[in-house]
Image 1 (cartoon, rainbow, N blue to C red):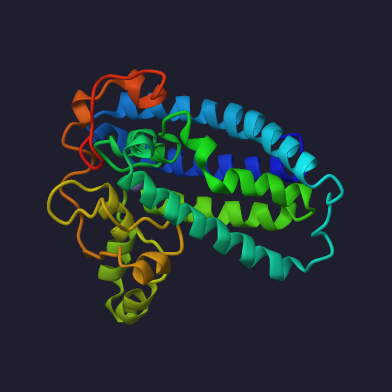
Image 2: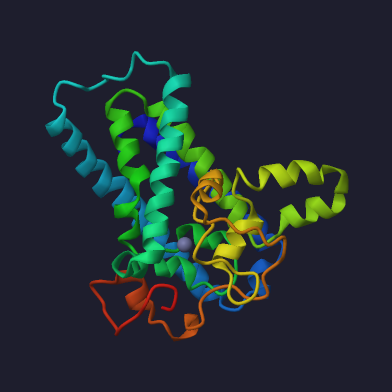
Length: 274
Ligand SMILES: [Zn+2]
């Protein structure tokens, strides 16, 4: 990602992640959770894959693709207003991601790529970079961002990526700040009752990672715009802390398969099971 706008996006995203990670580290999250070393090792691998695959490979491939498909369109969207393009980019990214994520839970080949993100046995910001190395390749926003930069709307793409990343950070944190705020400020409850149907909160995203009671793995797919779950009938809002996180067979999964499937294969699995 040689483009200065995408470099700025990278700096913003990694700084935000580092701050959230340090907050969790300082508050003792990694002393309390079950497999901190494995979670951090997966995170480090994901960070490396992110910079090489998303930054290098996809940046180059998407760049070559748009240059060949639309050779005369460089900067073609530059004259359009940022305030028109930004919401379009943001909602398109969110919409595409909702369906990719839903497909990942309903179709085994993609599930095996997404599964790594679900095998963690506790919530923490390490999950933001916990994935099979091929997950970044199928993410629509990575490709779309490269197209936007080529078309002269890099700023819109950066803002969309940053907002999505910020919400993603807040919904993966171990600390249930939403329940805490609701308890501390009961007068704000009407606000939460509306917002929880529109924006993804820890309540709905922790449920997506949950196991057993109050879990909702086959739903709550949106990163930010929870409205898509509300509209497409996949929303469930438990208002509870989950007693367990992860998958029934989290501990039996092979780390090599988790990171490198389909290059490394270790037997059969069904969506939602393994
Ligand atoms: Zn998922």
